[in-house]
Length: 207
Image (cartoon, rainbow, N blue to C red; front, side, top):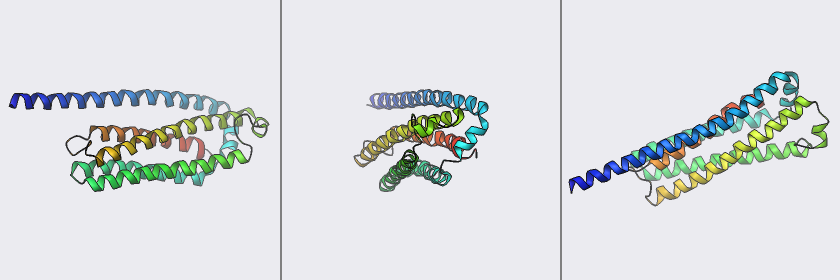
């Protein structure tokens, strides 16, 4: 019996290690994806510094700052949810995960209003107003929509993942003794937050 129990424990441990390695490899590919975009941004910013400066002045820094605070807070709540579950506080973990999901939703709502404000002023890829501007400004807003849009897609995916974690914790599929899925979900969410921490100064603080 002990041999069977030990074998099961070792198998669970191997599965956990494999899941963590898989997540780290996935996160590495995400870093490469956004890293390439940051490199493109750096090249064009070097070529058109004054025009990037002018374009950045049209963004709403207050909204960007508010969204940064929201995401930083969401990173804290998802980390605390793991600690709560490790300490056997299932209800607290669920509350913290729900708060993370709420913060993510708030981020997307703010981003929606920010995008719609720009679009209503005719600033969007291919618009006559944007095409009338200098090349550097066109490139700036092109990168802005692509990079923040891709980041927004990652936020939406993160929201779905966190929603699943709430269900899993509630149904005891993720527990005090088996929380690797929650850890991996938190790692993904931390990456989403980290990417925004780079996007925020690049687009909003170069004024």
